[in-house]
Image (cartoon, rainbow, N blue to C red; front, top):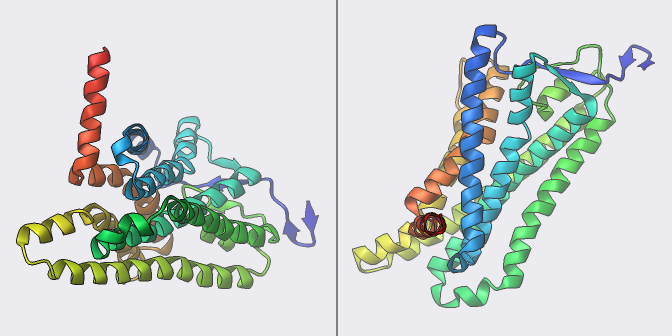
Length: 312
């Protein structure tokens, strides 16, 4: 459908990570492996938390939500990329592309918010241990769980509505392995000033507010830990938030490393690298970080495995 020199297109072409045919099989095996590890790892954490009554606490409620978000995040893009490699097709329908973009925004944003919520939970646990159960009541925990999901969907909905008003020219080739918002804006032949302004303001807010909460929480935590007289007590207090701190450093370290440090990398390659780290690598690493550093999760996993072995 044409409107002057503007065209409403029915599909996009995803260039993927490489144009070299000989690299496609390697990429397929590599990303299939990472996808399976992510789904199984995060799925196990969610299952263990759901089955073990001992883990029905605020901290593990937030962790289960993070695991669900991580499974969903990688599932928005990697299966389609794997299918395209297998079928040797780069096409994705307009509707599927918009849907993929919407959910990719939702799950990256919710990861950010959940990390802030988890930092607040650790702040209350370490700085106000005697009042922890009073403060972290079920109603507040449900609220702190629901709010990130609502806000992330509002952010994604805002970007999607603004994108739907745009027209796209004859060039429908997305220089990415999934329908990324920034990549789609580059293809639009109508004015994207409002989209880019909203992307900057909302993106900055989404990063800044949770990071400020995390920073405030850990400053208070460090102060509280340093007031503990015994080394054993200090280590015990710190170990309760070590896993979360590791994930925070991985998440925000990726943002700083990819987008803030000067690089000779082409902008498209930089965006692909950032997306792989956010959507694939970080969700894959989270189960290892939480299972290897967390005695409760390791104990619950051990009980689940022993229970299955006994049943067999």
